[in-house]
Image 1 (cartoon, rainbow, N blue to C red):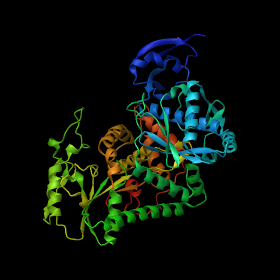
Image 2: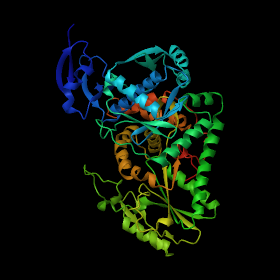
Image 3: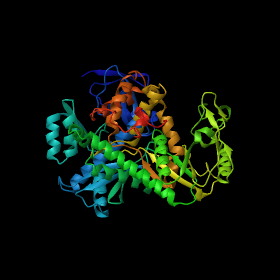
Image 4: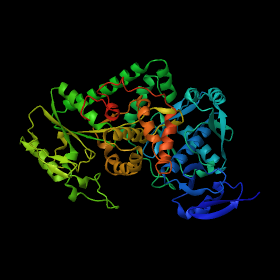
Length: 552
């Protein structure tokens, strides 16, 4: 057996043929933030169990990066479901479902299992035992029909339905100490990599707490977010009511010709929620300012229009105001550490002017409101005057709407704050969740291509910066909202597929953004595509695919 030569971090190195990347990763710990999770080989992500490829250009991916962190999460979930299977004596009727993420935790709901403290303690002990044993995790390509039979026999019917629509002839199945499962994405080599986790009881289930990308080598205390959890739970209940808990369920309903019913029921559920929020606003006698905030691509503009219509049905005269019109002139805008304008921070807004205008309106004065010219980078006044009558109400949309510093001069009782986000409840299957950030990224990609001519590569490139702005300026305030609205539509990824795939295929293969494009293209393989023609003209989905009856 000879040697192979690889170029690792620009330096040529020789290693014995048959060496795995996991065997050499520790030699490069000084270049990483924490432990290596994956390897980047010739601009393709590979697992550490892969053997060194002669002539490859190589670097390692640690758990502070998104792809590395996702691998840690998947491996921890596999470890958990294996431990539960052991604790439940391999009873097929006793399983759990990974529902959604809350802060740095993942909510796990029972399926035929009574989750109490004794059960949680037993599962946690089993997880630690398996982790201490550092058991290997292997991957095998299994023929699709065989995989479907295997998962059906194991009681994993979500996976059986999922692979009914698989075009590929094989499925990659992971095995841990005799337990076999499917996971969307890459896995760590062994259980010994899972050093930090905690299981906590919550509601009817439990939360698996894991490190985040900011601190991959330690566990932060889990932050309970009751309002976010309630909104996610409601979406989950809506999905169950419609008989759609997973992508396989959605595909089944589409094949049965039930698409129109899915769309109409989902839209009706959202309309009912908007009406509930409007009613609550009407019952608060002093509200004059409805403050709407949420992360990128949440559908804030369409929501504000639809809420305004509902408010009008309660006798209000709603008037939309965009916080963006209160941007400081470009030359006064703060810059970030890279010298670029930071439009996400509160300091980019003329907060003093906004508060003066709103207080004057509250006091019955007539105010001329500004319009920000994004081409010239300056505020302009074009005779847009407002005077608040007894039935008038301002619907204010902007990323800082939940931050009381933004509206510090306004009485608390005059404000009603709404947090909106696309909180995806649809899962790939019982153990593979769809991150809400993926849904929003796809929404933004499609919208930006249609309205701004932006490429998918540009959208993917700027997404980490958008996410940092959300972490700093939106998420810390979400629990202060009076109401939470989930704008995700259970069918939307099947609609977005036809728009997103051509954009993703256009990302150059030699670009840093190609890895993310490739991941999303693989993700879309799970979905049957559907036409956007049957969408209602007021649907939030129209804000992204076009054809809305609103100016969005």
